[in-house]
Amino acid sequence: MDSKQLKWVYLLALAFIWGSSFILIKKGLVGLTPMQLGSLRILFAAIFLLMIGFKSLVKIHHVKWKYIALTATLGTFVPAFLFALAQTQIDSTVSSILNSLTPLNTLIFGVFGFGLTFRRPQVFGVVIGLVGTFLLIINGAIHHPEQNYYYAILVIIASVCYAINVNLIKKYLSDLSPLSITTGNFLVLLLPALVVLFFSGFFDVIQVESVQHSMIFILILGMVGTGIANIIFFKTIQISSPVFATSVTYLIPVVAFGWGLFDNEMLTPIQFFGAFIILFGVYLSAKK
Image 1 (cartoon, rainbow, N blue to C red):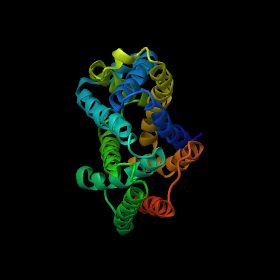
Image 2 (image 1 turned 45 degrees about the horizontal axis):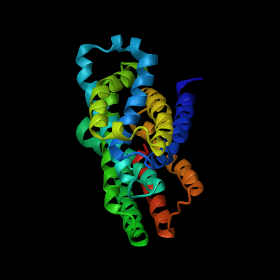
Image 3 (image 1 turned 30 degrees about the vertical axis):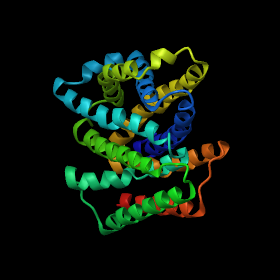
Image 4 (image 1 turned 180 degrees about the horizontal axis):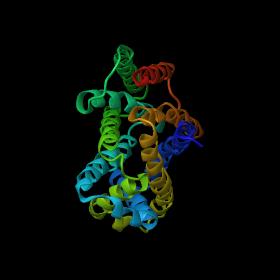
């Protein structure tokens, strides 16, 4: 299978894996705090990746480690906690839709920070995407007063982190294998995640049944939704482009919405319209 076909296979696989991540976060938060969830997610992924990819670390030249550390922080560490914190206040479906701003942010930061060129439809896409985001958040806040929609800003910040991350990988780490990048990322994050977990109070509640039950969801999230997915994602960036790779966020809300329906989540008609506008804006921003 050539790269043109393979990139679509990777994209569909990522859509299902990452689309399922939001409901796993929601279930994990039943027994865990956001800090515990984020650190456990990273630790489970790190243990898994070091088991399968430790030998690949020798392929990373010492001058590349600063970029490995930077992409680890922006692409995994910060978003892991931001998403967990955001979903204590907003639905998993809304979180997944706001995450679809990543390609749009990838274009913005690619143009201003990494020398990417852009066309007029892409500028329109940015504006349209921002209008859709405003509709989604404002209408959600009106119809769901029990939820604090200021927390939606955390998801937007996470999408910015992802956008900068993919541009960094494309520019500075394209010569490394996806397994080397991913394993290096989580080796860097192992100690910080352990520190956060230690001070989160996790070891005082580890015997609680709800905590142990939630850990099962985060084990799946860490190994599959973070470890394996990152390998596939980095491979997709290398055989395509940052904007194509992040266009997986067109499909993630569809999967996340399906899981949300099973868990009794529902969007208002205006939120549906806002979601459509966001995805249309993202489509224009990714259009060549």
